[in-house]
Length: 173
Image (cartoon, rainbow, N blue to C red; front, side, top):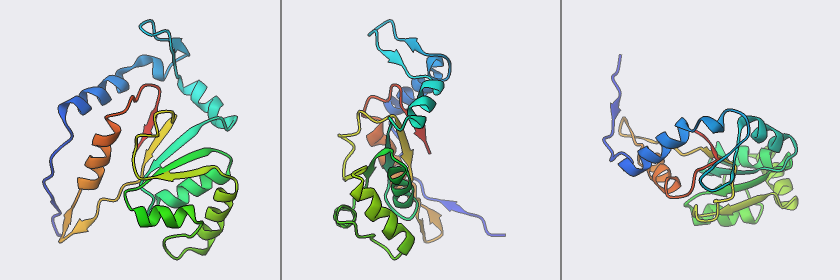
């Protein structure tokens, strides 16, 4: 059996880890609706999040618009949800904005055209405009380079997401 080598990469900063740990410990997120006494803002519960999904009054961000993220984004957008897709590849973003799938996939091409016609899919190359999202889904690649898994892209995206206010956001990896 072959052993896998893992490429050594710099882990996210301790500030990011502290921020994520604090969010995960926030008991109000997975229990009933509550109000944060510090700022009098509502704390999103799982039940309220599900209600937002059912009413299609939710904003989803998909980070990474490759062969997993783009199909996911278009399916969510065609179902009526507002979707912001984020990718660093400007050429890919232009292609998506012009309803042209960046790789050969006829069913995805059709879904992409419909999502853009419905004006539910928005794409950008940075995370600065996703403060108002409810759900963040990571679909970042971890390429295998010379028999080593490279987590650099994933850690970079996590570091960027860690710079925004993650209160009341569901993060899916």
